[in-house]
Structure formats: C-alpha cells, structure tokens
Image 1 (cartoon, one colour):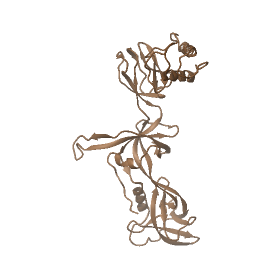
Image 2: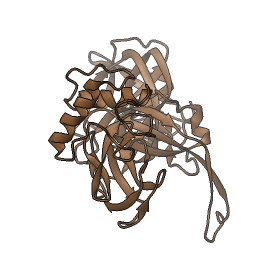
Image 3: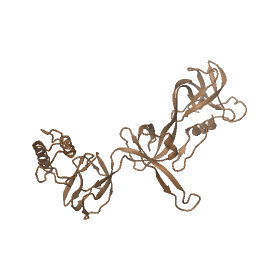
Image 4: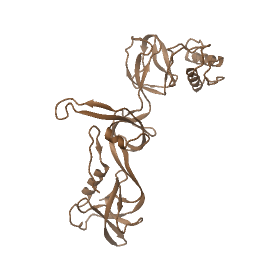
Length: 362
C-alpha cells in the first residue's frame, strides 16, 4: 500500500498513513536486501484482531461554539455593558438602558411586546413563564401561553427580589431572550449611544468550549455533522469531541505579493464540540482535530513498530515462536497513528501470534 503525506491548501492536513510510513522508515533499515539482524534490544507484541480506523488531522483553533447578536428592543441611552468575556446567565443583566438593567432570559422567540395583564395568548408568554419557573418563581404558575394572575404575581415576586419597581408587568425592552447562557465577545455600541428597537448592542458566543475549523471543500467528503473526533488540546491530552455544525461555504481572495497574490480560497466553517470540561482553556490556541477517514472491521493488527521496511514500500514482520523466528511478508492496510497500530495481512498470520518489536527502552 503506497503511503504519502498530503497537504490541502487553506488547512494543514497531514496524511496519517504518511506519518506512519515516516515512523517506519526512521525505525527500520530501508534497502532492497533482506534486513540484517539488528543489535537493538527487542521484545514481542501480539497480533490482535480488531476494528481499526485511519485518521487524519486538521488544524483548528480553540474557542466557543455558536455566535449571537444581542439587540435592543426598547428605546433609550446605553448606560452599561458587561466587560468582554463576561458570562451572562438567565436572570443576569445583558446590558443597561437609561440606568435600568435589561435582563437575559432563555428562549428562541425575541420579545416584541409588553408582558402585562390582559395581553393575548402567545408563545412568548409560555417562554416567559418557563423562565419564571426556572428562576424559582413558578409557584402557582401553569406554563402555557396564557398570562394569568399567577404569572402577574410571579413577576411581582421576581421584581421584589431584584429591588426594582414592583408592577407585575415587563415593558418591552426590559428583558431580552437568547437561546442559552452567553459569553460577551464584542461591543457594537459605545456608552451614551442611543439604543433603538433592533439595534445591535453587543456580540456573544455560547459558553461551551469548541474547536473552530476552516475546512477545505475537499474535506467535506469525509467530515460530516455527528462524526466523532479526537481533539488534541494544548496540554497534548486527547479528548473526545463531535462535529456539531458545518456552515456555509466562503471564498476569500489572497493579498500581498508572490505566486498566491489574488488567489481565491474556498473554505467551510466547521464547529467541533469538546466533551467535558476543558481545563487550562486558552482562547484561540491551535489544536489538532483527528477525523476518521476510513474504518476496517475485524482485521489483524500489529504495532507500527513491528513493521520492517524491505523494498518498494513493502513490509515484513518477524513472527516469534518460542526461540524460533521467521520473516513473513505482509500487506498493510489502514494505519492508526494515535493507537500506534497497523492493519496487516499475510500467509501464515493469525490472531494471538507474537511479533518482534523494539523494546520500549531502546
């Protein structure tokens, strides 16, 4: 099997198979003649039958998933915004207009009217009541699309605890709805600026760490939403992740001098969610994302270090049977550099046999 290193324009992409071949070449003699006995201390490893996956990595940057635009729905002067990096949860202030905090609530439906007694039924009412319940003010409230006396009283209790004027109603512009917890990533308006309905006040992301990749269109043949990946974080520890979103294709034009000046490059934004808490988070740090290109089930595998390069990209393994050894030509398949294993096949090979490998301390 021929193995090469691949580089895709726009995203550093290294062929795992190519890396494995380089490893084998560095470890083993590479000549047309059979390998001579080596003085290197050796050990043995088992021939294992299992599923093997070949991966390639793409370069990404550590950041946060999703991006949001936080807009105003009332009228007034912008008097406060949270500092960059502030995490805003439901019940916290997203910004301030005319000295009054605009409170973040969770929901996908933007506010477009006052919340008050006598209002008509609507999904926005149900969204508000869900938040009142989750904030601890749901006693007696039925979460539906009706603004009832229980809804009115819940708002009053919430206002009392916030030490604001108690009215039992929420005028348009006093709350803003976002899909979840947000992290402030940018400010659009300066303090003292007039805020009107629909005006962009600030920008935000979710608070969920993610890896952002500008993938080439070529890679979309093997990167799909839902794919499981491994992410190597700045501490060099691999973590499980999953491709959560693939955006729209964008084309950029290169600048400057040289052969690439004016050349266009087409990429696609890909978001990878990382499982669990990310310790030592460094925003915009470079990370590797290992994506599965191919998988073979129920095949024989050996450590990559067991492969001896003989000639023209061909390999052999040394089978150890007690004190006897024999050289067996093998055909290689997939290489998993993360696991350090290679798929092999060859006459006389079977699961459970032992093959020669360099000792760990050599």
